[in-house]
Image (cartoon, rainbow, N blue to C red; front, top):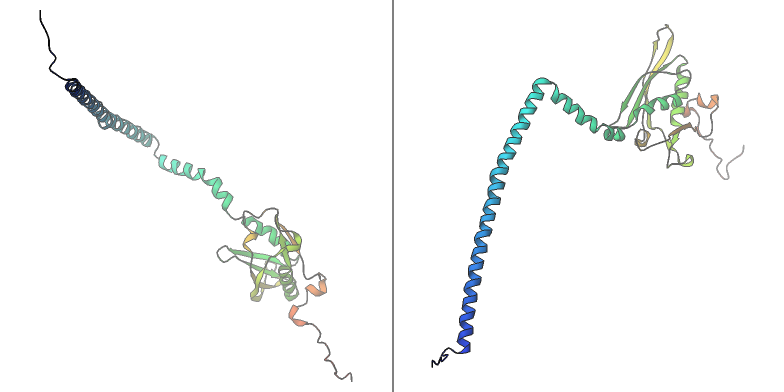
Length: 242
């Protein structure tokens, strides 16, 4: 008869079991780490090796094809530049000023007996200079000045009651006599003024230009120099009537 006596207490057995489990977990962790390192190494070799080689091959292929295109199309760079400019053309077009309106302005301010010989528009200073001539001499010039000074315009967002003056800082210079192509004596001059930036702005739409010469548009008023007449002085209180 054999009798077995367990000399290892339960606590000791649990400790040994825990140690064995720890060794097993450490071993598993080491294996996982090694596998992860291997996977990382494979991925690194793909990213920095195979992929880099593939990119290099594609770059060489693109350069080779581009060289072929350039050799067969010598003006390719110019074509690409023009194409890029065309892609931004619509955007630039919507931002540029509408200077063609100057012809509408001229048709509104030029009297019948005044002809424009040259127009200069300075967008930086917002000034418009008109070189003109007239066989009707100074009366025509006075008429022209008053028509310009009395011209206003309005547009979408601004009603007629709040119309904007066309001209500020109106000046006349280079006045002299000359002969036109028909050997007729004419008065030559240059009329300049500052215009509002809204006049040619792309955002200004449905513009309307009209004459408003202080409510007086008679020929006798328009043709007489403004500085000739002034308001009549009023009598002082208590003054003599004799």
